[in-house]
Length: 354
Image 1 (tube, rainbow, N blue to C red):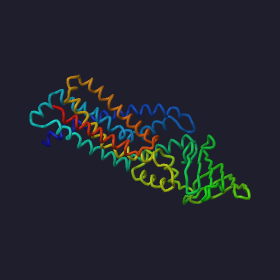
Image 2: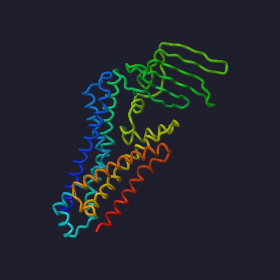
Image 3: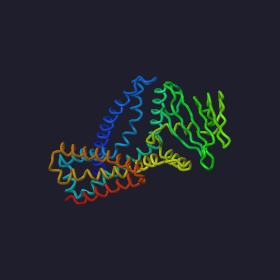
Image 4: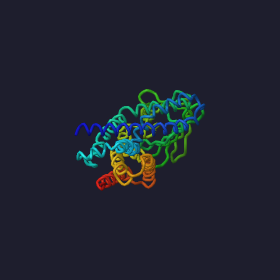
């Protein structure tokens, strides 16, 4: 039996890997086309765009694991069925459900290995790709996010944004008292992060506001301690998908402590956690294409139908997740629960195959 299990696992994994690489290559080509719009801006060149696409390729392979598992299962097991090898296994008493779980186990193990990569390897590659891209686009050595962001530190609200085409950053800091009244405003035309997390502001204008009026001061340089560390600025510059599990947990906790909305990061975390479940669900859904009523159709027709269903499920999952953000639905209900429902449907359909 172990020989049969290894044979089925190898057949499925070859199909899954092949489909995954095709899907990842297609989405990488689309990403490259998107990056070409920025080629020529700042110091960003064609080689930088190609390197960005290459470094972000492992992340796409991980994200596309569930839809490629459906199509890989149809191709891998379909070829065995075409050559009557599955029929021979069934005559030996191996059930369809046993065949399904035989290919699910190695697939989940392979996906868990990818998830380890999502913790230790993929974030490093995404981090390098993102920072190199932003640095080249800004044509400066700064690593702060191009386009800017808002963040909060207690009663201080901080707005960091790109001021000019050379990539220099301006900072606006708004300070409030315990009664939420504006008590101070600081504007700096240039900002950089020094050692220990201190921010060095240049060409600074401050305004102190009180019941007696306001007092405006100008100074060439101001050092603000404990505003944001360089690591925090890098994290804020990165998209949530580029963060590891530990970074996501830590950043969500930090945002909640600051009273900020962490839904985007929470959604990304649950999307990653639900990947093994959705992959297993897609494998179980592939069984009716091989053993069910659809087996009377040609393999090409089944592959096309499986590709349509896999891509549709992939994009519906993305739409459902972001719709949940708009409607303020907890991400677990828009990621893990649908994956469990699809898995239950796959198991139910597999059990009904005669």
